[in-house]
Amino acid sequence: MSRVWRCVLLGLLGVMVVSCSQSPEMKKQKALERGEAYLKAAKFNEAIIEFRNALQIDPELVPALQALGRAYTEKSWFVDAWRELTRAQKREPDSVPIAVDLGKVLIELGAWDEAEEQAQLISTRDPDNPQATTIRAGALLGRGKSS
Image (tube, rainbow, N blue to C red):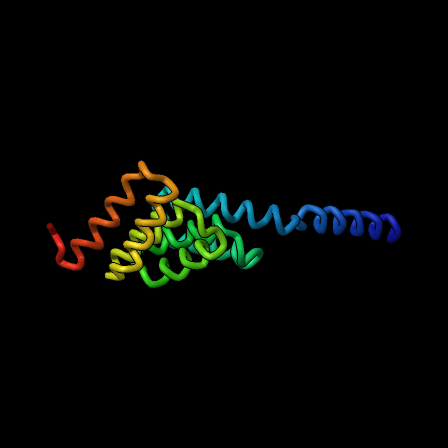
């Protein structure tokens, strides 16, 4: 009888181990998806936690870096947003969406020269993007050059 119980216990233990183990790729993807869902639902604290979870698995995951930057921006944590978006841009220097997010944060921080650089990058990659004009205008207005 004890042999049967041992086999059953070992079988249950095996099922638990298999069901609890996911590949790191799957875990980071699920954390990223949950974070995006929280971000859309305006649950910024929860989104931040999920994006950080994804980044613990893969610190170079650009979508998580950018999304974390957007979540920080929504909480008006502009220095943190700048840090994460800068990390994302170093990994994908030609990304227009990252440049747009970073340009907006730089305007909030009063970094006019850097914001203008982002506007220039956006204009060269996507000449019809209206965000480049908005960021450039913000930088000019911030310097007091309204004309």
